[in-house]
Length: 215
Image 1 (cartoon, one colour):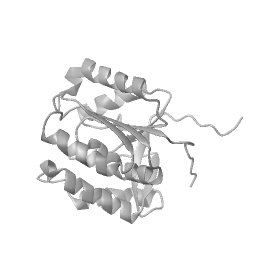
Image 2 (spheres, helix red, strand yellow):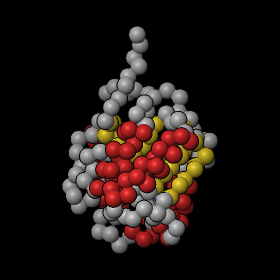
Image 3 (cartoon, rainbow, N blue to C red):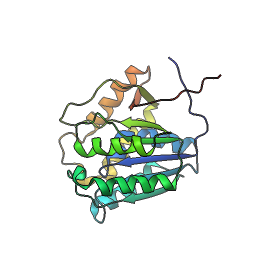
Image 4 (cartoon, helix red, strand yellow):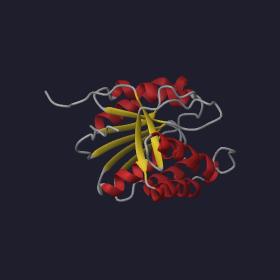
């Protein structure tokens, strides 16, 4: 298996259409990066859920998923399920985020995601951050839109378990959902781990990747 590092990693951007998207799709990766790099700057943007219980959950959760990081989180109030109808507001938010940071890595939804909010945000990210490595995370759901992935972040059993524990602890508003449980999160992580010769992993889609392998 070929392992390509991305060089120095000082700044990361993480975006989600909804509160809990980032944690579900890339929470283990954030934990691994922040534990390995104290002081890592994480600029996070969530398009919906602002001003209420969901925002409070998100702030507590991302603080736990980004230990010892310089976390800068913005949560907007766009309506859940209607983000394509608020395209200009979403686009402005992403462009403002781009002016604030020049990250080495961007974590965002996949452009192939079946949810219209996720898919719309993904398309915005690849245009606003067109010279950056954008990894598209996956979120398991009833649509059955999981596919073949191109990039993997192996997770230790401890990190995978910690991710699941934090998801259960910090998002009580989601516990009633039939798919929001330990088996779903660890099961997908185990499958992705098998695919990259690890116990557990998070997997990502890559729309475009520029290599620097020498002259």
